[in-house]
Image (cartoon, one colour):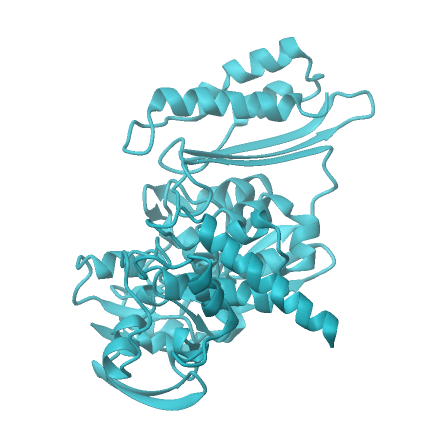
Length: 163
Length: 279
């Protein structure tokens, strides 16, 4: 049982090899080993959701996951959405509707919202608030975030109707 | 930090027998908080997360078998759990946000033995059984016999929780789950209640099960209240007498989340709300 391990993990669609301590936290692996600094650390206690990523399609707090548990898994981070020049729709609405202020909660908030939209969530505020309950924001008072998600759902509904 | 990561149940049991001081790790939603805080340095970890066979939910004609590594999110998606054990689903929905629900496991929650375990009141009223395994063999414990105290269980060295069995109950006349906390996600409960009630045709109580969490070092069934109400109609006078008996079965504390006084008062209100609902 070596302290250092080597494992494969699929990050944002690319196969990566990690070499290092077995118990390094996934958030640190993403930020330090793979330079994916979009994922932020808020509380480090699994309360705030800032470090939210997808692990095999499930929303998780990456501060609570030792990298050994991500062996062979698919990880998706905020970098899987848009790029600065070609933002994803959610990112665009977070920008235009004031859903982002200091920015620490934003990547995690968008990951939770992304899953919500992808799973066909509706545009009612109560369901959106429920879906984002694991993500805390100390700036916006949440209303602008909820409005950003509503706008995204409505826009994607319009697109589906046109098709 | 050394990590053992077995890929089969037999390997896991053998490793745990050889290293009884290892920390079994499931979803890590509790342990990783302590680790991040720096208090668990140098521990030997027995990471169970690769044991795929313990992630399954299976049913027989009479019961449901929930693998120890079934997550709180998974439980909320399963049709049969929703239909037959809605109180467990309600409880799982209050365990943190979705990020915590999709990591935290049923077995991990039990093994952790927090006085505030949110699934415990439902598991107590559903008369769950917990199946344990070690390299030496298997045994089964009634859910209420698992806990020894705050963060302590009666699991023996080298023993792991394999699954939780739940017999399908007869459809109850009333069922009830309520968690009282400061915020539904991300809050540890001040008190949590689950109740099941079956009535006879004449309106008298055929069977009652009521459990409270966060009201004692371990989850408590209100056996005094349950036996007092057997065969009686829950009239306002009877309910008042029953509520007065609640104190006999619990022993809450003052802590940073709440006070003994508040917990007693809110628990009496919850029991009263349950017994009077539908009448």
